[in-house]
Image (cartoon, rainbow, N blue to C red; front, side, top):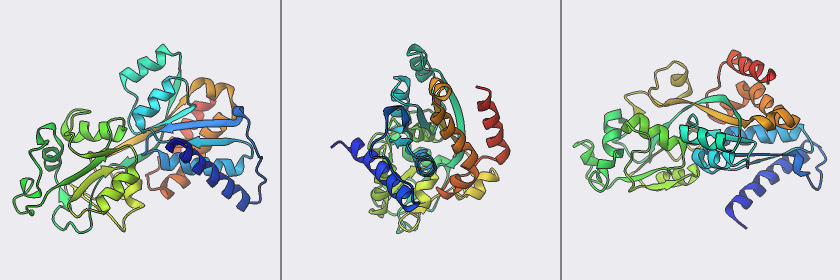
Length: 308
């Protein structure tokens, strides 16, 4: 069994458990037409997963499968016509717009939340709890590869210990956003680090090494605060409050789902799911560790969708 199959089985098992607990009968098989297929960003995944579980519990007979292949990987599948919805931690790129157009895939961009991209260190690290954008640039720029390898090269007062780096893979929208914001060019990064599209692997890597540092979405930090420590960037902590008041800059960012227009128009269950995401955003988005849009913004997006 592939890791993807195991992942989808996990999602299905969670849905069945939820349904049984609520006293809902679960059909032994689900028709292909009632399956909503979602993939994409690992950052958006916690939102999609939570929405899928709640939606399936309330809509017997509709199965929502949620995969994680990164923002870029999700767009590749989406523009190939394999998905109804893809999560994205950055806006769609021009090359992806062209790929979708070439395949005849029309889509709707739907903002669903705001994230505070979070730099994390091991709790035993008592020297790098605060870093500047310039220090992060020094650490992550391509020129740092095989050159900036010890903590005291970032700040002479820090220990002469090796730096172990963990970060998203190149298919990740978080990688694109971080490199553009911190290094100055999307995709420009040192390559001598442990990369993964699975943020849980990055969490484990940093939590096990006192000299480690990494970055990913806020939800994964909040879920693992007992084993990680967040870095204050330019003196500001990555918290929902600091996202809302605008002080956690420049690492606050919108996150999205992209919906295939033909699925939205021809499949009532897809439209119902997208509407469910927007109607329940104010409640469920904070539960998984992100900052919801304003209620008025969710209402405005719902109104726009109703005209399609």
